[in-house]
Image (tube, rainbow, N blue to C red; front, side):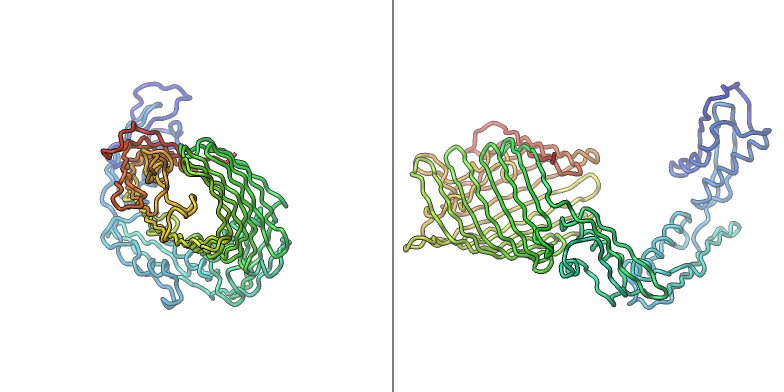
Length: 561
C-alpha cells in the first residue's frame, strides 16, 4: 500500500530502502528499480504494479519467483519489505554434444563432465547463461566455427520448485586451415612463414591464433598486426595476416633511480628490419653514478627471430666503486633459443679485454676467451593468464682462459639460483630466492675482477651497500669472493591493487675461506605496482653482530620516458 506522506519536490530522485534481502539480491532489485527516478505515472494500483514487476525481474534471475511484498512510498522515498519466498532449485540436466571426448579440448571436456547445475541448489540464471556462452565459445575456439544450439531451454516449474536444463549442441564440421595469406610486410616469405605457428591442413585453433598475434608484435618488426579468419563452409578456413612494418629506425630514452646505481639514464636505437631476412640491430648507451655501459647487438634469425637466432654482441662497460674499478670490452657470438618466455638458453663464446684495479694494487690488463652457457626457465602454476605461483630457476656458467700468455690461467665459474613467488590469496603472498656460485681455479687472484663474486644491495642483501659484502685484503679493500651464498624471504600483504606492504629478511656472503660469516639484514618495504613495473621502497637494518651500520634506505625504480 502506498502512503503519500510528504509532498516531494518534482525533480527529486527517488531513494529506495530495501529490507529482507541479502546484499546481492538487494543490489539486483535496486538495479531494476533504478529506471524509476520518480514515481511511475498512474494511481496507487498502477504504481504498485510497476514496482512489483521490477522487483520480480530483479529476483527471478536468482531463483525467486514467488516474493511477498509490502510497500510504502512518497515522492522522495520508497520503502520495500521483501520476503523472497521459496527458491527454485536445479533439477534434471540434459546436455547433448555428439562428439567423442578425444575431439574436445580439456576445458570443454571439463564443462561437459562438471556442469554447474548441482541438483538441489538454488538456480541462478547468470550461471546458465555463462555456461552456454563458455561451451559454445570453447567449441568455436577448437575449430567448430559453425557450432550452434539445436535446443537451449531453461524450463522453470514454479509449482514444483525445480528447473530443468536442456542444452543440445549442433557442432557442425571442424574447420581446417586451407590457406595462409600474409600481406603488407617487406620481410621475406621464409621469415614470415617461420613466424606462423600453424600449417595448412591443421585444425583451426583460437589459442594458436592468439599466440601468433602475440609473437608477431613481440618480434618488434611490426607496428600493427591483424589476424583474420575467412570461413569457407563446411570445413575450410583461410588465415589472412595483415602486417604494418615498424618505422625504419626507432629511438627510446629512459630515466631511473636505484640506491645501488644512483640516478641513471639510457638512450637506445633499434633498426628492426636491416634486410628482408629479418636481421635486427639494437644499441644503447647507459650512464649511472657508478659507471657507463655501451652495447651493440646484431640478431640473425635462424630461422625464427624469437625461438632461435644468432646474436653478435659488442660492448664496453665501466664500473667504479670505493675500492675498485673495472672496464671490460667484449665481443662475442651466441646461439640463443627460447620458447614463449618460459625458457631460454644461450651458448656462445666471448673475447673480453678487462682493465681493472683492486684496492691499492697496480692496474692490470687481461685478455681472455670465455665460452659460456646460460639457461633460465619459468614454471607457472594455476591459470596461465593469472598464475597463483611462479617458479624461476637459472644456471650461468663460463670457462675463462687467458688468450695472450703462455702460462695460461684457467677458471670455471658456475652460479645457480631459483626464485619462487606465490599468492596464497588476494591479500597474502610470499617470495623467496637463493643463489649459489663458485669459481674453480688454481689461482683465484688471477681471475679478472668482474668475474669474482660480490653481494649486497637492492637486489641481494638489503641493509648493505651495493657489492659491499666480500672478503678483504690486508689493507681492508674488497677482493671479491670465490664462492657465493645468498638467501632471501619476503612476505607481502596487499593494501589495495597498487600498493603492497613487505616484510623481508636477507642473508648472504662471498668468501674464499668457508669461515667467512654470513651478513644478514631485515626490514620493511612498500611495493608500488604499476603497468610499467614495480617500484620498491625498503628500509633495512643489518642484524648480524659484526655489522653495526644504521638502517639503510633502498629504492629501486625505472620509468620509460
